Image 1 (cartoon, helix red, strand yellow):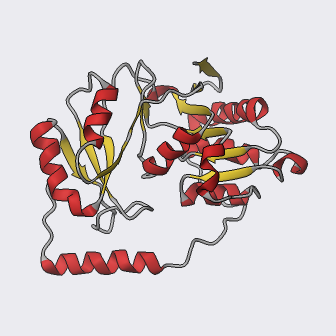
Image 2 (tube, helix red, strand yellow):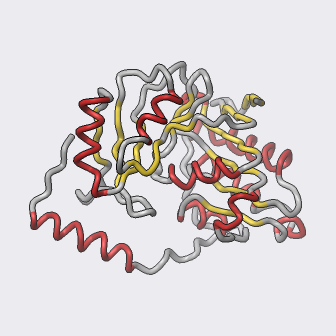
Length: 267
């Protein structure tokens, strides 16, 4: 879908984006405010996974990468419950403002991204996983920072509901792009990659803008036979910032079930 903006609409969009950059940062969230949304049948298993993950992996003096999404947020909330003598030694790097607020609500210490190369472990979710455990991520718009955290982490732990584990991908792939490249990329995806890109929009009718100031094209492909090749091809298009195909395997995958139980797979 191509979005053509008139001069008047372009001016409105510019004013909207400019105003967004001047907004005060979000206030710290109180612990009583809940922003996690997990399908009701999976809430018990999400809690069980969070308890298991924290017990297995969280230790003194770690640098922890905080991925995005409700399943990852459940683990982050569980980290907030650990004894203070351990918690005060942890340093956390958040992939999004929403996750940062979850961490602050649990009195976790947020540090700068200069510690990304020293990340001991990252906890993250996924929008979909195929039979080879490749992932599609970016439904929440944090794919760039999430992929950076994965790249720097010594250990990656992924958790997702059972229905997100599929034989082959059947949902759109988020592609983060510089706004200047929008029309070029739409044409390239359609003519050379058989893709059907759709510009992610806000309810107000404006394009969704990532925390990095970029647009997202949610793109449907007929099939992706070679995920690693497709990731490389898409990232090679001028203007593409990041692609929601994650081909670096995690160390542990949790699969939440709707009966409160879960499975785990180590790589």
